[in-house]
Image (cartoon, rainbow, N blue to C red):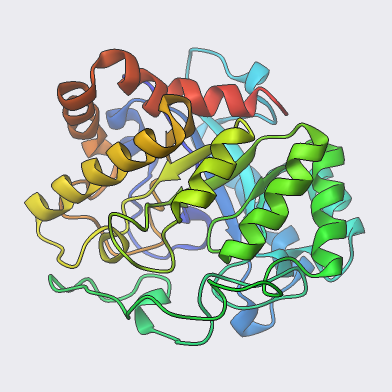
Length: 323
């Protein structure tokens, strides 16, 4: 089965990638989104984002990926690639950064990572955890910190006025707004702006908080807001955000539970796939893109082939067609 993956960190990953050309071909990838991750901890900004845009072009040229900027540019042949931004720091503190990065090919922007920035607040910045670090330790017992944090709950910790200006500009450019890593208030602020512009809202890589109670996962209210916008939640494979333990069978069951719950709350049209490959410890059930046929088999067995095609491909393709 062909699939679309809404998020990976291969552009900034050092090591053997889970989304190499070989892995993507083996898995049946139609389109892989590559995130330009701009790390606020290191003071990175627009220059880093622009450098990663160049890296993306070089990667696509090397492997022959078809660069696309909207759904209508996706054909049935070959592997396609789309450039995204993870971390509003990459805008360089100016709303004009949206225009510049759009010209460079960026078609989706995650407002935050795990730190507050000029645009808004993340899911939990009051209880720092090493499990929130990129490529953290992959222990079998991976239970994260308890659900807590002013970044997740309460008004006043959503978008800043500058963040609202940037999201307005993204919608005007028809760049997708990505609320992955964002606070609950940030999600709802983004949903309001996206609805006003008729744009779908996206969480490119996320899970369901009702299934596993961690701040990084979405509350039901957030899932419904994304669904009502016509957007999607890309279910990720991050072991310590899916379940308390990392064994293969536990992860298989947890992944299906997150899919089931998001489908129940948001409907069949609101569930997509966003692996977060190369941005987290490998998932024991699905360690790389080559193993994804396992997932399609499980989803088809549990929910039927029609829903599996929506989950793997059609829902994301519909959203990308809004660009």
